[in-house]
Length: 229
Image (cartoon, rainbow, N blue to C red; front, side, top):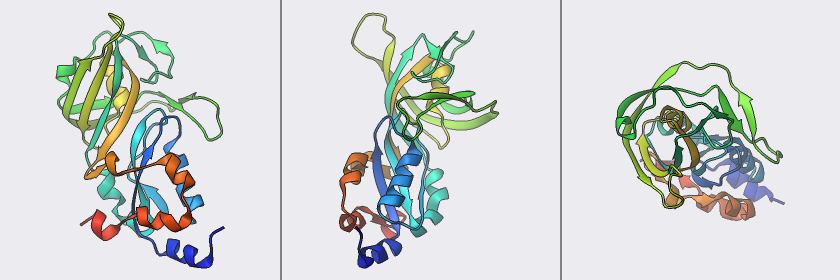
């Protein structure tokens, strides 16, 4: 149980918390958990992350939320695995198989400005749910993203498996599972490694955060003056 002194410290705390989200939980669960567990007044984030993905989440504590647009607008880096030659309605491995598009992009074409369309369906995992659900999000218009780097390399394993590792550096808003569909591939796994200047190497694993005492939490929050210097 938090004492009054600890609650006062939380109330006056401003800064950035870097969290390493595990695969299998919604990004909103991370945000809600941090707010509830540590009795914070206002908690936001610098960009969502699909439930099937792991990696960096930039959590904004109290007055640091005024810098949300700066974090949201930052470039991002991802690594992961795509399986070429098969795709799903969601673009990831939890979706329903569907026919390949008549024309597909080649990996070497994934450079510069890129017009994307978010898949109508997405895989979600709700709090307390035992598995993923397929949600119909309706039709979406095109949006523009910019890709600085997209490298792929075949993985070992059974011949013809079609699994390739990838490394992607892109502007805000890039949707990796939409990119997988455009490539005639399925997103098998994904990890966000960077958002702007923030790196997952400096992040706290979500599981460790769950075990943390309130008195230790403040030491994990990067002060706003340092985070956005």
